[in-house]
Image (cartoon, rainbow, N blue to C red; front, side):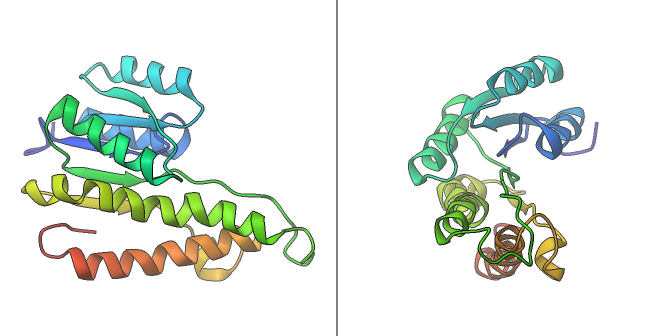
Length: 181
């Protein structure tokens, strides 16, 4: 176990599957208890909590909605009394050929933006007090090279990941030095 990690608490959005599940396994292996967020993958998230067997919990919340973000932060505080780390991993895409500008609607863009950018902002806001109270408060925002190069599954996805990268830089500036982003 890594020094100083035992007893820490992390919230991992979209933590039941994929990259989020890998993050949970890695953190749990270092003694971190995780709040494994899921929107629809309940069985996966609950199985992961049982697999890591360190007191981690699975919590359903729609992190595209402010109320879901607040509920997730409150669940972490009610269960563990602290939040040390926030991993904003939840995200989605809509596949569309970049050359076909009619393949995406404005609502498609807004739908992706709501989860991929607004959700992480709302999660930081909901967790801020807990992160500031920690002596190691940190936020990790998962972006993509799609946001750097305008590539990937769709123009909307690339745009949201570019916005995430810029927002991360801004959050790092305004939350320092109490919270590392």
